[in-house]
Image (cartoon, rainbow, N blue to C red; front, side):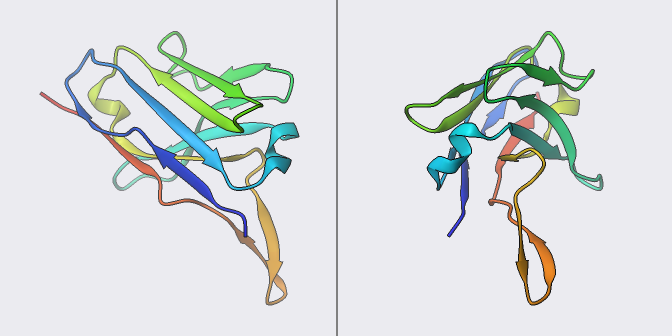
Length: 123
């Protein structure tokens, strides 16, 4: 069963740093483009960063220069290093493939998301 397990979230002060780790359940994601998303209170989930199987990255404008996505093929993990955190970075952060993993259940597509990890940036 496909699962995404996120960890590393915490309460930090503005300007602080955190490193999030994603551990997909299946090695098939070694060759998939992976991504981090986040969902702030009252907002829709948004794409934060992407990384291809070859290491090409893409970032949302709001995090460019501050966040770095990386992957370790041997460990099958995807990390998000977050520096100079701002209050507006507060959200639940999720990892997934890109596009997000989906499968047919009951005749319809169901997307698979983990529990996410909470990042709170506050004084």
